[in-house]
Image (cartoon, rainbow, N blue to C red; front, top):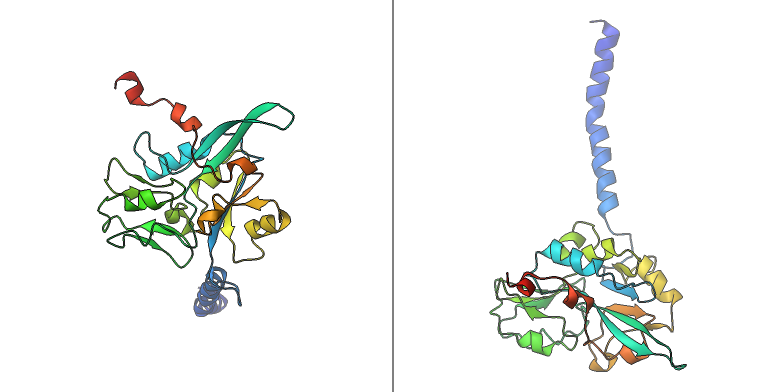
Length: 246
């Protein structure tokens, strides 16, 4: 091997620590939050004008979270409505846990199984939950249920297992109309913050009189539906084994 080749090899090996250190620094900088920006607070914006009630969100959520047949963390309720001119039509109301700033489900839990993370996501600790259903009754949005398989309280988690690794919730990723926008409401440059600002005056929440301060926002929600969470969902019309005696 020539002296020139030995020198090239020694130079390459000696440079490796500096190169790898540089790559590590780049990765660290990419993962870090921008300077001056606080911790994220996750929220969801639902543009009902884009929702076509296809229930792709319902199905993807059920598959992602392995839910019992007939139980759902999110659905799209449908309503027959009549306009001021007498025309009839269909109104949609995508429903899920509202991840409230003041969640009424937390103080009623006798074992402190329900809690809110610093990023605003409300969760249930399955190891603590005793399935008493107090939280189910306390939720003004009927967003909770007792899971038939686990016997524990269940609800939308914003697909926290996906969010924590940088992915979108399953319902957002599969929405064919782009009706669901998820992001950090504390970041003024995030898409959800931008959309909320653009739609100022048109944004509403469900049951504002409950004082829960929801972090699921709606654009285009019929004013008559703002206080509604009941109604038939297309998900209820999906085929289930018990329908055929299975």
